[in-house]
Length: 121
Picture 1 (cartoon, rainbow, N blue to C red):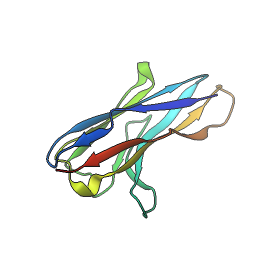
Picture 2: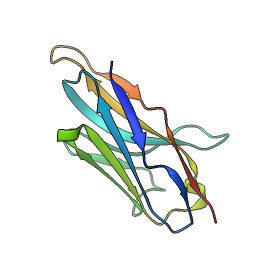
Picture 3: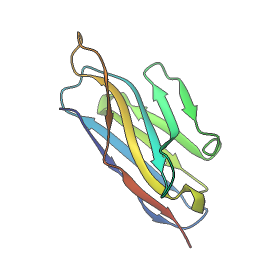
């Protein structure tokens, strides 16, 4: 099975930075897209940033200019560099990926367990 493992979350002061990492492991043929979503208490899970295998990137409006998504295909890893963090960025951040395990099979959507990001003074 495919597993997504997130790291890099933690407590940071407003204006600070964090870098999240998500590594996909298991039987993987192709990763079509990887991205980050977040869910704050009492709110829905929303897209933060997503990058496709073709290099297309989508950001939430709240992330534009502050967050940068990137990927290392050799490591099956996606990163989210978060700068100028605000208290409203506080949420559980989830890694998401569209992955096919075999070249002949269809892709499926996978989620990590989430990593807590808390922005507070």
